Image 1 (cartoon, rainbow, N blue to C red):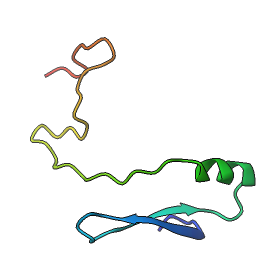
Image 2: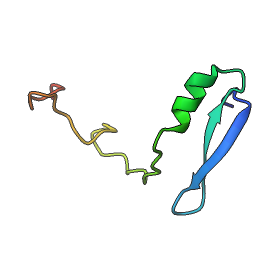
Image 3: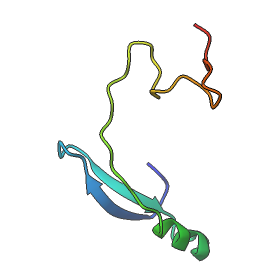
Image 4: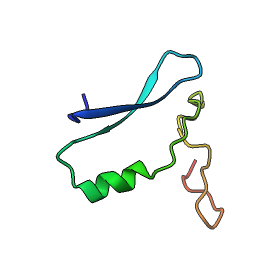
Amino acid sequence: MTKCDTHTKIGVSSDEKYDCYFSTNSGSEIKLLNEFKKTEIQIIEKKERPKNGFVLSEKTDLENTEAFKK
C-alpha cells in the first residue's frame, strides 16, 4: 500500500481497532532516515467530521480573519 519495505509499529488506537506504523524504504538516504527516527510521534484520536465539512477546527488565517467566505 505504501510501497515501503520497512514497517515499524509505533502504537495502537485507543479502541484497539488500528495499528499505527512508521514506514520507510530501506534504500532511502541514511541521513534522512536517522532524522525521521528523531521525530516525536503522538497518536491522537480522530475527530468527528463537522457538519460544514472542514476537517480542521480553525477557519481563520494568521491575522485572525476568515479564511473562507461563507
